Length: 453
Length: 85
Image (cartoon, one colour):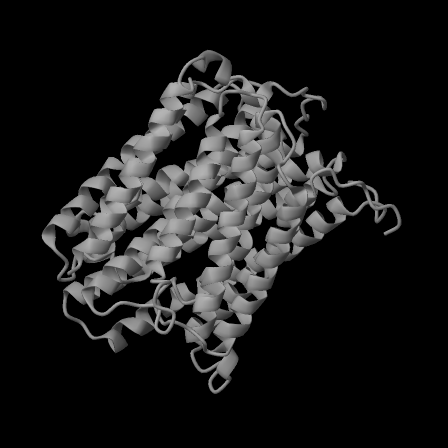
């Protein structure tokens, strides 16, 4: 490791490395959790890694360790390029990345020690909550100051998406984590559930969706060398996402005594999500029309394009699952787990990896260390993710129908065991690919350690 | 009792969105949309487009095979459930 390259984009590089590293840890926790579902006694009496602690660690690490930094890494590269100016402060950016990693370490440690707020997806204790919010505000500040000193008068749609994603996540995080109550981090009763699911949905929808859309809107035109199909349509998609997405979290509470008007808002807006989704997909797919060969040839664009296809599937599922009759079979079982894996791994995770593999060669000025490894990872993630979806959807339908028939849990568990076994196997594959991917990223960033293949 | 937080959020969110929207309208963000389409391409596209290798043709076949296998399996399950069970 002799000649370190001069890093023109230290912040982007730091976030890319963050993403690559924490993807390994996050998928390992996922594998561990899947194994524990398969063999529940495996970690009995091992306090730090019982299922109840592994699962929140997996979810939060995937969210804040793998996907978000990956998308931000690409954003820290393309925002200055789109605005025709340098990043406002690379030093601040690197500082944010370091603080971000410190928060992730604290996340793993506190959850392993059982320090949790006990609210699904909002488990982190108050002090980490504050760090996360501050990190998002710092990133937003960095971007908005870059926007302020821009030379290009028009904000490209990716810039809109990233700015909105960062500031909305800061708001969502404060509200959803009830951050004004440091002791419990919760309200009482139904209002708490409403805020929790407001958070639970928006943290995916208003963080991962806009950041992923931003990356796709940048990478696909670049890779195909086509102009965007319609910038007006993309802005329409952006503004309708902002209006529609913010209120749909309550669709997780349709079987709960929540005020009907709120349920109606959630259902209507969930179905209305078809507008921003289709605006995005039509735009991206028309941009790529006739240029699939170029997309196929560029590994970053290949990941990103696959992500947009998964976005189609996950959004259609999501809109339908908000309908009460569909939800009666699909909620509170493994169907939702399958849905979440298409969304976070298939859509946002694929686009995050695509962003990484598209950005890293630009950051370093050299080709990727190994195109083969990246391709290999692509196939492992794709097969693993599709496999998850299939087996977990089957298991979920078994569970959902058993529930409707009034069957007891112990009768159903043996029936879905085989699907858990397959799922753990696929998880091992994804963890393996994450290790290879991290190796590839590290070797790509630090030159002098081997010839590219 | 449930409402204040949520209504406040929706209200504040709408107010901020509208504010930003009108700023965008006034500062001409929605004009010149034809040029905006080309913004990602404005930088020099320094490297030549990457070339597809022969291995990628195998990939396409693999993908095709997976899709057909998946559809066939679904059809098989349906047939089994409807007629053979």
